[in-house]
Length: 73
Image (cartoon, rainbow, N blue to C red):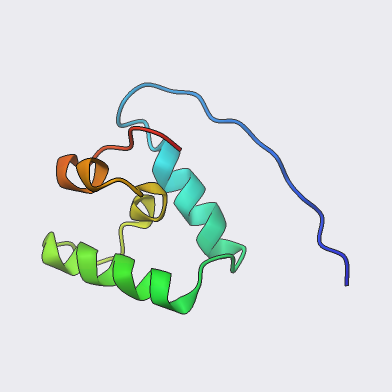
């Protein structure tokens, strides 16, 4: 089975949903490991959210998670 690589770019202002879009694409393409998704679900619950915040899949830096923003993808 051959897997094609898809490259794309996003652009937008702060809080336009760029990280959420990337997180959703990763999730929907089944590119997220179970432990990664569990960590996102746990972090989302700790923030008082009912649904997983898929933008957290792109937030690798502690500062990003603490501030609720994505600094670098």
